[in-house]
Length: 79
Image (cartoon, rainbow, N blue to C red):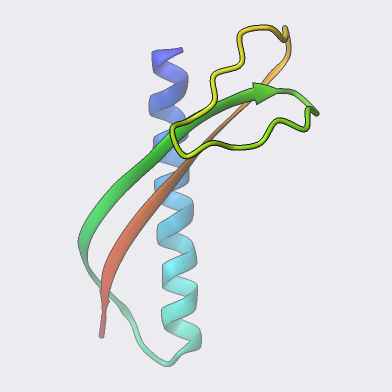
């Protein structure tokens, strides 16, 4: 599970950077330096369930099939 968390953090961070680059480009700017990076809670919910995400995180232990998610917040300078 620890390796999965690290991989998910890496993928979410890369996705956030790519989105920020696209937003900056579409606004006529360029992505500058990373100012801060914050990780949200790690959520594990039952696959295809209607569990609600929680501010403190959800960790489903009853379902065999699970869905894991994490949110990253990256703040960049825009040039």
